[in-house]
Length: 165
Image 1 (cartoon, one colour):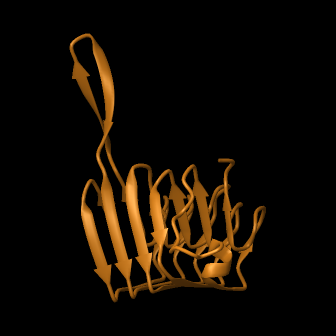
Image 2 (tube, one colour):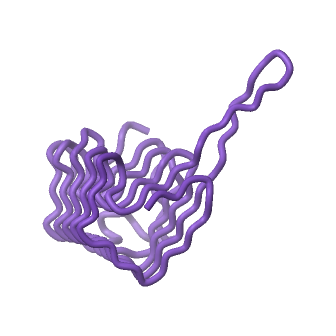
């Protein structure tokens, strides 16, 4: 499922054994970039995509380019609450076995991560680039806040990883 330049809200959905040749095994959220030309110069402008997921499950998803279940691309907003990620796999250097967040506004209210794998690199469950995911107030750390079991990553931490901020 691709969400480009739009809004989607998913409640009580189940995604199982979905494969992507690109990023985001089950869901890809991305904003298209378009150019505005003004007189003699040009300015870049971004559109925005938004996804809200509640009470959903992502089972055995796979993606070649990261985010075994979900890819949240630049200029996107992704919110996740009360959802489960089980047995998802990503095969890329900056992977995220379950979720890859690339310059996006990702927030996680609660989630359970089990047996997710980042074969090519970082974050057995989550890999983020540039913008750290938001957690509820008083949540000390993503890895302490969510439930994890048997996560694995080839290079970076089994729970979550990021590039240098």
